[in-house]
Length: 290
Ligand SMILES: Cc1cc2nc3c(=O)[nH]c(=O)nc-3n(C[C@H](O)[C@H](O)[C@H](O)COP(=O)(O)OP(=O)(O)OC[C@H]3O[C@@H](n4cnc5c(N)ncnc54)[C@H](O)[C@@H]3O)c2cc1C
Image (cartoon, rainbow, N blue to C red):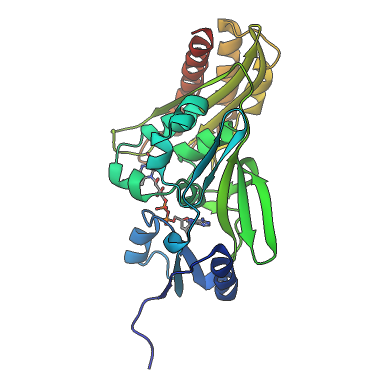
């Protein structure tokens, strides 16, 4: 007789057990972390995995280690709320704090993991946008071993990542912060509780008034979060005066490939992206001078 259970539920105790089971189940298995995204999908039968692997019982995946001087790592079970409350992240990686802090729902922040947020693959992820500007890397483990992947190479389309069946993200790694680095996170929403219709993270190193390295990441204005590299090139090696900021903001706007949906029109998103980049650059400059 066919089982009435919609899926088998397992709770692996270790990463090794989790990836071994994931490998056995192939595309029939799905990881569950905080459950914020996956539970509604299961309930509405949008996905029908044969096996659900709840990784919450795995010890040692909920941590934040390090600081801006040495670089920082956090684990697959670190919640968005823990990131928001971390004094080190607020001080040394302020744009990640700002992205986490803007999320209004305490339930979502307390249940949802940062890694779960990244793995959903939405281009509107505030967290992915900030982590892209911070040049984060992801540790991906499977039965063959582990690899470290820049977050820039993680996304391949709307809701699509490079993760293969059998892969698990175990850690996010942030590089050390160069002296003179500041940033700003900016976004636009329809209502306080809605997801971003445009979001921007800027992370810039300024030495003796000159921009040594600029990273500008945008979300919700292309199929994946992306770096506006033409805009960055206009900033590198320059003093950030208003002409340079204006040119970079316009370049960033031109690099977007937005869509029209219920949150906004493509035209509005394109223009707003440039305005947010300008706002973020000016805020960064203000912070650099403080
Ligand atoms: C009301 C609401 C408001 C929200 N607002 C925002 C917002 O303002 N900004 C924003 O960026 N996001 C927002 N989100 C999204 C939310 O942050 C994510 O849904 C949540 O963080 C997902 O994390 P989770 O641990 O619950 O993942 P889960 O739901 O458990 O998993 C999500 C997906 O990731 C996979 N996965 C989870 N962990 C791993 C892993 N370690 N390795 C590989 N795959 C894994 C799962 O298999 C699943 O496919 C909002 C969501 C809701 C419901």
